[in-house]
Length: 551
Ligand code: KIV
Image (tube, rainbow, N blue to C red; front, side, top):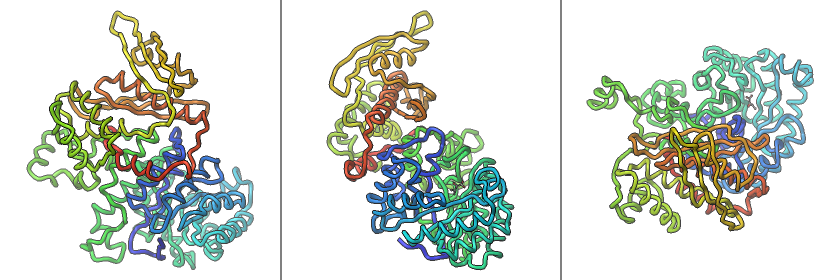
């Protein structure tokens, strides 16, 4: 893929796997990053920043695997971050080597405060390093992006000088980071206009912004920059990222789509031009959002724009009345445009395998026989407890039953809890170990979930600290499936797990086993690298992935 300077649209640079993964606790393993990268390619992002190659062997392996398996001909550009040091740039180049279109993204701080306290370097030293390292990156790849870190707090004259020189040195994209999320949209506009007016060779590159969300202005700042001629935005799915996160991809894309007539004028088009302003397949947004949330364990706040559970829910009577009479009275976009499934109730305990398979097919899931059998058995179990099975329930079932299982992992065979206001909560569990041993144990706890976790711990014996536990209902109603999401800490690492059931204590038990298996795999140091992970396995997971996570 090649991008012309000054394209007639916005280039979407997705940094979910790099800046997004810097969210506290959002650590992803190579396999999970690869799954997300495949989905980002399906979504239609132009560039995947797959990681920071020099940061860790895991990041290096993820970039290399994604370069091999997602970055082939016709695929997105694959990018690695690198500080402006030779070792980082070499690591990035090596990790990206299999990609058809590799990009090295090199950065160095330029603001006075960073130079004085962090880099302890003068402006002239930084200028020389930036220039030299861009040229060095260029010796490996044609496509070099440069970021002057903390650009929005950098002395504009110095910024112009750095940008002009790195362009001469070979940078093809100039990215302006609002690293600490300090800018307001008006200031962002002034900053970009200043660069357009004072950097003589700026028209030779694509201008980009990277906006952090510390003041909740990331999307607004990215859109303000677009109005001033920026043609690449860096963003993440669900807005995850360092501290308060980044601009959310789904917000920028849907703003450009819903307000196309407004933005068209900034692209020299007629107001009513129909041509899309990004290459994103918006129908894949919801699925991608759920996938990222599930694999990072980072829940989406219900009122999150575009992908939150309430984004298309209407509570007030006046609004409901308006929606029923004419949808556009209170809805500026149709839920179907982001791929949100309808919540149709169609199956019950008398529904057969054929109806089950057909509905899954209609929802976009073509399960192989083994997964279909598992999902159907589970569907029957749920249908015995819950009268009506909606599309959202079906998807939760598919998600649970098609999770990538660690080859040799702990399986929960049995869980039973006794609890009540005058009983000491007591749990009995049976687990099968990776070696096939069947172990039963019991424990008491402060509550039923605590008792279950203690009983499992007595047998699994992997030290960890439970740091987050949440339950969300899949649908409305007293018999709804509940999805439990948990996060465990082991030393500095976080591992998440998720499961759904009509009984939330049972869901909690399975979510715990899922998280423990991820931790177990980490402890076994089973780093799945490209040759051990057939693409078909990932594609199978994606085609079966259930995109209702948390409604
Ligand atoms: O926030 C920041 O400045 C960054 C850059 C590396 C783009 O993440």
